[in-house]
Image 1 (cartoon, rainbow, N blue to C red):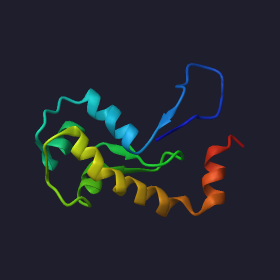
Image 2: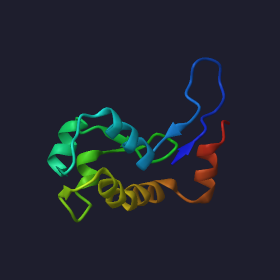
Image 3: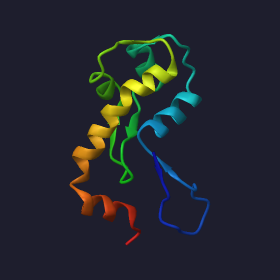
Image 4: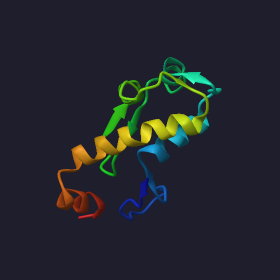
Amino acid sequence: MAVRPPQQGGDEPDTLEFGIAALDARLSEAELQFPATDDEVVRALDNAKIPYDAAGNGVAIEEALSSVPSSEFDTETELLNQLHPVFEEYRSSASGGFLQQLRSLLPF
């Protein structure tokens, strides 16, 4: 998922990536070959904190991986598919409801 950040001057990115989109971007930069174990994923990403919402809240990849049923992933797609509901659960539990979600999207 991605949300446009508030417009300000400067060289800010056009979107703010979180959840699977942020993880996918980190995986693209990492030197990770599939099939891979959860330990290999953690090492390749330096146990990075992956943002799971537009407010910038994040979870360490090791903690997120502890919530999936597999410890080995044949493809990057399999890894992303298994982590998607984990990131969604973090996002929905941190959102505090519709008004909080709306506030996180507005620049004021």
